Length: 461
Image (cartoon, rainbow, N blue to C red; front, top):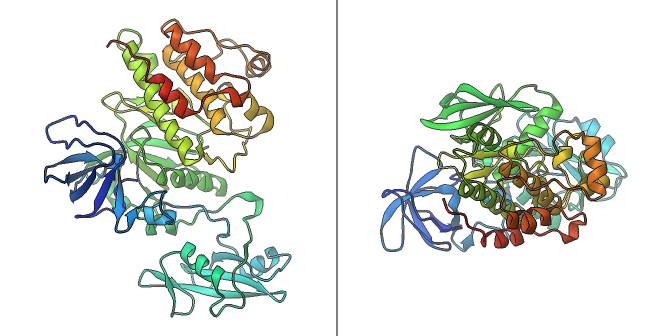
């Protein structure tokens, strides 16, 4: 993702082609290796040079850092944290007491374990391990930025520590065998990992200005971070549920790197209120843009551009194993040059987890099987993409006009589909939009297939 661990002389590999938009930019092709000359005040842009020594500016989210021995990417057997990501930890139970931990560790099989925040030493952790029907508690200290139990073996993070003690007890009562999952299935997110991953920002460099919008848990403001214009999402109500959902969204964003996804700059978890800072999208919400500009400004070429941008972003999420679950025009933002970027990852989930919360799903955008079976997949995102296409070509009109949510659920199940918007090319509607709305999810395209299909469509500006 962006420039979290990047520094001068680091190497980076291009993930996408970049043609450049000005003479200061350095064009490159996917796969090119570039050297970082310097960071800039804008965390979204780096000054780099290519193999021929030519220098220029590049967008940070078009490249991936390279480390000696290989790319810091999914092709390597590296932990997420080496990429600066923050991962949910099923074995981390947050701030609970010693007695609560022992009560939870049942039945006590040898090697069953959990990690909690230390109650006696605030800021440290405690590893709790079962052996012979007892629970031993080991203080995990942080010394010179590394973690240790015995001050002999040191680890860069908890993941590395757990991997070590899974293979060898090395002084513990028993080697680690099985993690006790978080009660209720909600994985906790340790705020400290935002700091170790390099995502924690100093709030004193951040200013908030006019409000841009509001959501379930927070409000979004235009702001400035170290002289760069940014978007600042704040947490309104500090409840356990709100904090978990808010940090879960930031967690997902640390894993995402694509030019058609809104770029995370960082988080302020130590501030009041808690804040997520992301790139500023000058044209704002695509839904508002569609409704306010209308046909006089928004050409067929612009609409098709939006459609292709969103499909590219969703193909990336599909490849990464993530389901967005709330794809809609209201959750697409537009840059100053009318590039559409998918945003709002509040409902995004690893597709292997899949389970949906019907109370939060937007009925008119949600696939029938997701409503019926309470499971979301990439194919249910494809259905939502079809509805989003309909919104784009109807200039932001609400889908299923004059129909209640109950009517939509009943009629869609029996074959009803929205008609083609007037501005949508018939071929595009028949071959793409309707394909997304196949009742059997197996018959819907993947986003890769959609992107391939969309390449065949062109519209004169």
